[in-house]
Length: 114
Length: 113
Image 1: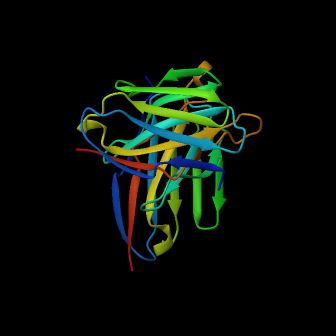
Image 2: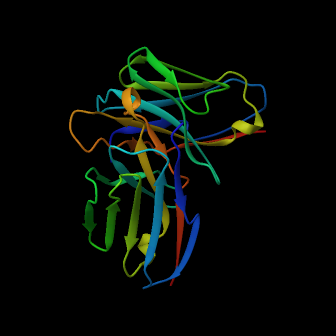
Image 3: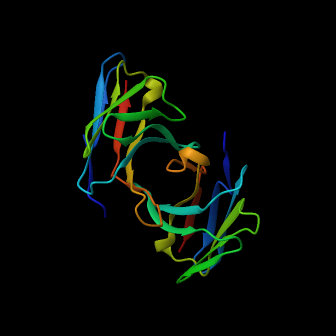
């Protein structure tokens, strides 16, 4: 498996509290992604990064922000968590030096918002 | 935006039976990727198809990319309990966003021993 870790792996929080999820990679890959996975919806892209301090919105970005101050770290922040943000969050990385241009996924963070 | 649709959503098979999942894109794809996610796990890359009409095999798994590069299929021969999981197809967005993938919703495979 690619060197990707996510922290925390599990979190329970209350509505209205801020939450930050961390993704850390040791592969020096340029691209990093945050997805959420919900039953019946598959994997949906929240935000992505194409370099340090270069980020952009994905399909379901409302209520989320991201930051990437170093190549290896990509943070996902829920400014004020809501119950609809209860989900499993996956970080992924990719690089486009050689084909295939697959994405490598981290182990996931299960977030419950009460 | 680009849409990637997969059918069926669920499939229950007896061990030893064959299984097929189908993927259709609303746009022509430069390539298509397949991922497998075991229960409680994370998606893991299986394969990428690039050429029109391409067929690739990995042991009991056969992957096809359609001639028009808008559809793909994954066929598993003689399923085993180790095949249990959700299979996703994914296609890159066109143009400048090609490093982003749009995933299908997946086909969840259950294998009855």
